[in-house]
Structure formats: C-alpha cells, structure tokens
Length: 261
Image 1 (cartoon, rainbow, N blue to C red):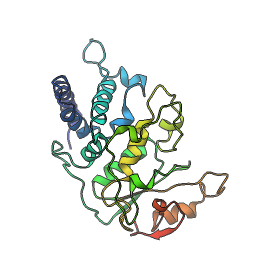
Image 2: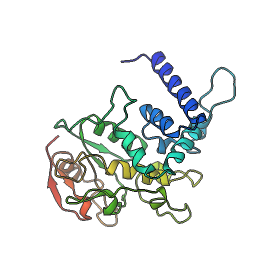
Image 3: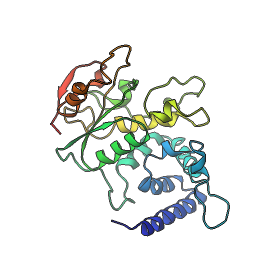
Image 4: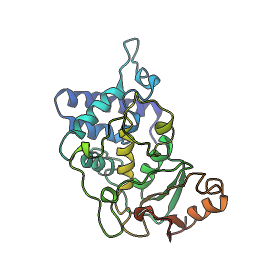
C-alpha cells in the first residue's frame, strides 16, 4: 500500500509525462498514461466540475486544468479511426499499468453494485478488472444500447470505427439513464456523450453477454410507473444479488441463473 505522499508523487509524474507526450503529438501514449490512474476519464472531463478545474494548484501559481487537458487527449484519440475501440482496450489492457496490465479472469465471486452513478460505474469497472462478476442496478430506467454495439448471446459486439456513430448533438440527445447525477444533475455545459462511451465500454467488457457467467451485466430497473414496487422491493434486490439477473441483451425480462455471491 503506497503512502499518500508516494501516491501523490506518482500522480505528478504521470501528469507531467502525459503533458510531454501530448505536447509531442503522441495523444495515444498520453491516453495510455491517463488510463493508469483514471480509466473512467470520460466521466471526469472538462467542465463537469468547477472545483476540479481549479483544484490542481502547485504552490501559488495558476491552477492547472487537468480535466480539460485529459478531455483534449481523449477527444484526439476518439477522432482517430477505431478511437472508441482504442479507449475501451486501454481500460482493460494497458502495458503501462504495472499493477494491473490486463483484466483478470473471473474468480468465481460476484458483486452487486447498487447505483450506476460516477461512483457505481467506476467501482464496477475496477471490480471487473480484478476478476469479479458484477451486477449493476439503478433505481432509474437505463435505456439499452443497440444490440449490434453490445452483442448478444450468439453474436459479438460490432467494432465501432468512428466516434460519430455513437455521438449525438446535445440538443438532440435522448437521456439514457446511465450515469446517475452526471446524466440528470448536470447541465449541458458538459458533453454527456461521454456517458454513452462509458456505458458502451462497461457493457462490452470481455465475456459480457457470452454466457451466464457474464463479467458485467447492467440490470435495467424499470420506471416506477411501470413496476411500482420494483425499486423498493427488497426481495427483488435479493434475488438479483444472490443468483438471478435480467438478461437485457435480448431486451426482455427473462431471468437466468448465475453463480451465487
């Protein structure tokens, strides 16, 4: 376990190295460095939080807007052919991440993550990479992504060549439900298309939707007007945590067994 001082030194080294690579035109290398400590950087980007924009201050100089810089690096990569796939790969396989260069195979243990806001989806990502099976649920409805993008039990996800395939103008974008407060509690000053990117990245984790031992399954909790008791029914949550899940890849409410927690 690193001390806070050593952790801060590592973060400063990564940030400085990221700046050097970005300045030299190597956006891909800069993104690989960012993903060591902040693989969910689409959710911590430019203009999402005023305090974050002004939080990186060394001595008495002007604050360094790290979120803006990281978003610039990410955007440069997303504009490349297959940029979406490159980002997704770096969240699961990153040779620069010495502590966890690749996602571990399933260890036989499953975890229920309640709430898919920033804390929930970040926790789900790290648990999946550590080999846990993860079920995520949310009290609000999460719109399913197109089957072609996430795959089904019989077909793999279709690789996305261009960022424009999933990008929508903010004045036309439909709320998807994924991201909690980031989706519903933040104005359009922040590009919410990054939530779609995070949703897609988690939903296409290795072995997801391949069989009943999915590495990550997002459970679609219906709205209260459709199923009034579903959001507060403790038995429902218990069923999900201890051996059942919704198979949303086919867009229905068929429950399938998974290994118990």
